Every structure is written in C-alpha cells, then in structure tokens.
Image 1 (cartoon, rainbow, N blue to C red):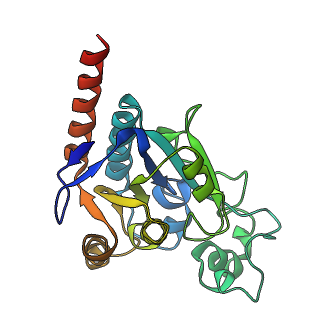
Image 2 (spheres, rainbow, N blue to C red; image 1 turned 120 degrees about the vertical axis):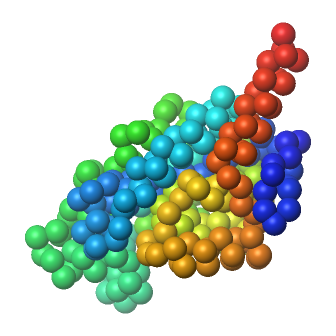
Length: 233
C-alpha cells in the first residue's frame, strides 16, 4: 500500500488497484473557442491545469497505474442526449448553446468535432481506457463501473474539468459505488469562481473522499516506482 499525504487525513491506496480518472479534458472545456469559452467562462487557468494533469498522468504511468479518460460527446443526431423530455437537454451547457445559437448546431460536444476531442497535450495512449459519456457523471449510462471492476480497480484519483460539474458528479458516484476517491486539487478548475471550487473541495474532503496536491501525489508515485525498480534489480 502507498500512503498519500491527503486531506483531511492521510489515506492509503494500492497503485496496482488504482486508476487516474481524467475527466473531460477536451477542447470544449480547456481551449479557447470551445464550449466553456463561448459561454464566457474564464479559462485563464486551463493551461496550468492541463500541464498539471500531464504531470499526474506521466507519474501514474511510470508507476503502473491505469489511466482512464472520460470524454463527453453526443451523437450528431443527439439521439443519446435524452430528448426534449430529459432535463439534460434543458440544463447541459452545449445543448443550450446549440439551441440558442443555430450556427453552433452539431459543433459542440458532438462526436467527431474538434470541440469534443481530448486536448492535444493529453491524447490517450494504447492501454489507456477511454469511456464516452453523455451525462455529467462518468458512471451514468456507461460501462465505466464494469470496466474498472474487471481490472480490479478500487481507488480512483481524479483530475479534470469542471471541478464542480463533471468531476464532482463522477467522484460522488464513485463514492456511491464504493470506490476510494481522491481529488488532485490543483489538477482541476471550476466552471465559475473560486467560491465554487472551494465548495467542491469542501464537499470532497468532508463527505466523499480526500484531496491531494499533485506534487505530493507525483512524489509518492515516483518513490513507489523507484522501490519497485530496486526490488526487480
């Protein structure tokens, strides 16, 4: 077991039974010209979050941790968006933008579009698990739970955008599915101001899991890799 310097108290994870869950690190949410940018959300912190997430992924891979990407994307005909009787079609940001601005129809969070693609800096590699989702939570209507369980995963380490929407929604669901959830606090950003991020951090640390700084996590994973190398040697 590997002890992490998490808040509100340290927690132990088993790297062999852990996955780093990269939530919606797509052009829609991290790039100028994407859905959040069109909606007027401040993306000035996004480049830092992308770099930090890259560091976390690299450290995880080096320690043999499974990398999981969640990717929000609708079919071009929106047949998996829920239809007019679903609240998803009335509350989800891309749905609202495409409805209010017809020129954006089929361009936001739609399969095969630039908006839906994972940012270039974080493109998945062979062996990474990519799960397409159509709701805020990565567990809703997907094979995520079964894919994790068949791999023996019990500990989930979260990074991504947006902290208060898809990241928190998936982390909450992870808790309900009896996974140990750890949020990398500086590898995420909210859709909104600092107070919103603080609320997510409070919810995670108080009720649903733990938080850790990327530097602490990467250091612990690198130490584990070096220990394993010495044993193998």
